[in-house]
Amino acid sequence: MDGFRHDYLSKTDTPNFDSMISAGVTMPYVNNSFNTATFPSHYTMATGLFSESHGIVSNAMYDPVFDSTFSKKNKEPRWWDGGEPIWITATKANKKAGVFFWPGSDVAVQGIYPAEWRYYQEDVPFEDRVRAVVSWLSNDDFDLAIAYFNEPDSTGHEWGPDHQEMLPVIRRMDRLLGFLMEELEKAGLKNATVLQRFGDKGDHGYDNTLDSMKPFFIAQGPAFKQGASVEPIQNVDIYPLICFLLEIEPSANNGSLTRAKLLLNDKYLNGANLKTGCNFAFVTLLTFIVVHIRPFI
Image 1 (tube, rainbow, N blue to C red):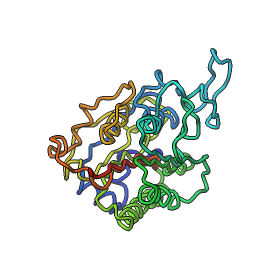
Image 2 (cartoon, one colour):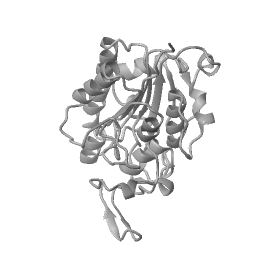
Image 3 (tube, rainbow, N blue to C red):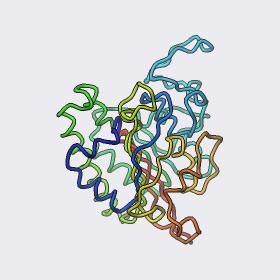
Image 4 (cartoon, one colour):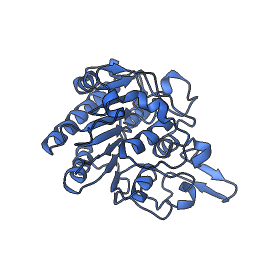
């Protein structure tokens, strides 16, 4: 969920989030890297690289080498080729990936698109995005599915992050999580591992060390600890974690799998055959990443 600050859950009733926290592993917040704007943060999560490495340093910027200006609508690969996003890493490893509105997913990075992708349209209902992703997993044999949601960020920009108008949208995102879990259950994916990093950032555009810049994180499923709280990870750690769950070799990145492994339970780390159902990463703007790990045959 875009701009979902780590303290938003304490502001109103969120029964679906609360249920997931009880069933999974959480942390007080996620440490963001600089720059905390939407596009840099999302591409950092997708690539495991800091902005100075992947090159998307702002939502809008001028590049003196290109003598050209970047905007959020820019689809030229030259702006995006500084990093390898997770959907490209997965595709190169013969995994099937689909992306619904993640920044950079509608660009031919390294000349490659994911198997499914969409041009961004803000008016596509959130529930339709969830249905599409669950359909990819249940009907189309996808290994990785990612989706993006622009709340509560849009409302926060209009009213301010601490305004009373934020409360209904926080409850709306809680209902969306409940809808997601219902759709997964109907699709026979009840035991999915749901790894949720709610928010690419908290608020954004300021010092990444400020408390207000930090989003929160929950993970649930057979690979993850239950009823646990661990030390905060960094947003660059999400990429190597997903690669680990997919059992694919990551591209060069700034993340720490050692940090991210603190989320995983001993049984999974010790090699138990837990690879049934799917590992689902819900990384918000409301953004989520779904990792489908197939049963052994």
